[in-house]
Amino acid sequence: MGLVNTIKENQRIKSFAYWLIVPKNQARPRLWVKWFLNPFYHRKGKGATICRRTRIDVLPWSTFELGTDSTIEDFATVNNGVGAVRIGDRTRIGLGNTLIGPVTIGDDVRLAQNIVLSGLNHNYEDVSQPIHAQGVSTAEIVVEDETWIGANTVVVAGVTIGKHSIVAGGSVVTKDVPPYSVVVGNPARVVKTYNPDSGEWERIIKKNLVAV
Image 1 (tube, one colour):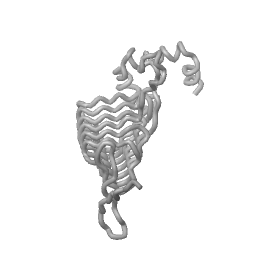
Image 2 (image 1 turned 60 degrees about the horizontal axis):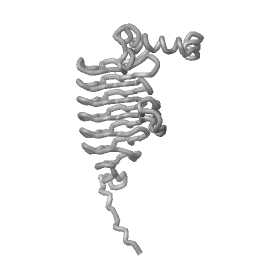
Image 3 (image 1 turned 180 degrees about the vertical axis):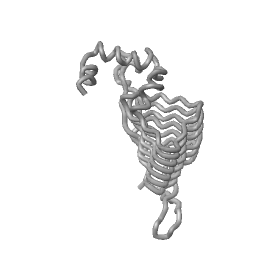
Image 4 (image 1 turned 90 degrees about the vertical axis):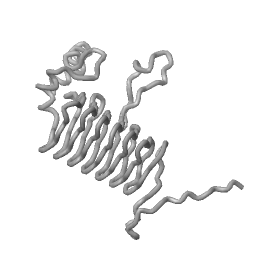
């Protein structure tokens, strides 16, 4: 911890250490980090598969975990530069997905194709600086167990999707989703929930509001 603190507290050493790990103006770590450093910091469960044509931009200062028998499909991108990425057991991250931490995904989750989960937002308030120079803010995305997310969905920072929920393809999820719900649209809204008393998935009936 003494060495780590020394690096963090000295800006020149910190900048040099960062350059050693990540090329200037890039998000992808250097190959030596991928080959020789990351395997000691990140956990890949038994039977887990990362397909060959993925972009796994994971860095040693933040967590990356892939659970037992889980898969990250081709053309997916995973980045933990500003927040941990944790993926549970028996979960499949589909073709062309983008995961930008902080993101936590539970067990037995299915993500279809071309889904974006980004726990990162760019700061923009200072109009005297370009947006890319103003840093970022983060808020964790949580996808609970047994959830299915349809193709081309976007989930924004800070959202929790409850257990055994279904997100219809093309949705933009901007608010928390209750467990055992079906959501659809932009912004996504709940259209069905599971009723444990009846044992049925029941539609949400929207009542018309009459102005008086």
